[in-house]
Length: 353
Image (cartoon, rainbow, N blue to C red; front, side, top):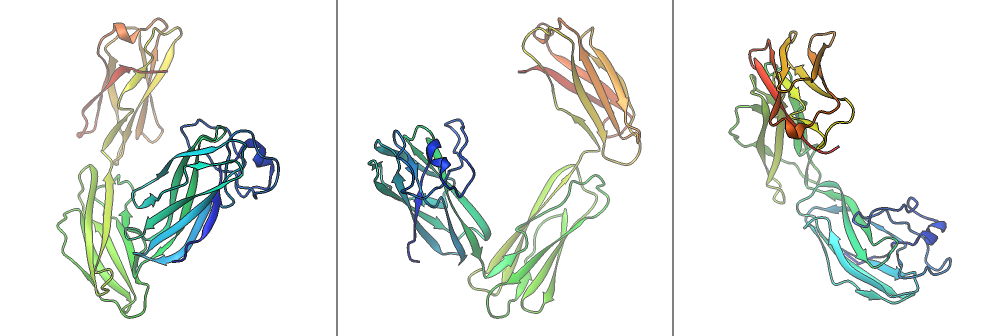
């Protein structure tokens, strides 16, 4: 693949008065990469100090076949009046690497950052960021970006089948993942055995030799928590002999108490402060909350039940002068009429404001 060139810059505020291809530069903490203002080189006056600039911050490699190794060189320009030092180039993940880049660029000079991207582990649209660290005082960190679409011989409509949060573990739910052959020829697909008691899987040929539907269905009853399984499809395409689909479902508990802890400031309260605990029923029927209490005198407790009887909001009012440091271990306690959660307690901890 021929190497194409682009020019990259982190631009001084004065540069942003020029025509920009991206949004206006905004002040940000040096630790966070900023959106880069892109403007044509050769317009305006040089900025004071070192200034890193490009004419193209984003390189779009278009659509390529999976497995290709993509190479691109971003060209840099020092729009300032002092030498520019490129101290570090940090790709966002291991699939993207930076070669030997120009470390010092004199005023008015140019440099490069070569980038290499491995496509073997990806499919569909992708976007990868590369952070550039320099002595540009206005924007000491900024990002380059490579993006495009990776075409695979066998594609999936979704590599992960994510089910909605389950409130009724006795009712089955289904999700469908479509498998397509994206190259010439007919495809044969076989669903390999998988050990799982949570999901049932069925493979149906939708378009002969070209398109298939993998239907995944939960098998009730399901226990609370997150369940997942991995399904493997054996294909006749030699470039992708096995295709993997993940299935994930989360079953909400019958009774959920939130938050998991009540936080108070690390100092004495100068005025009354309220905190809230919500007790929510994720199953059918009304929820009754009773016997509410807390291990500290003077704290007012007020429950309020929702009209449908599924939720109770407990308001805790801590009085002025309350100091959690002096109280020791505190817990908010209560009972419910649900067999799965006859009692609950929430710790009161010292946190920040």
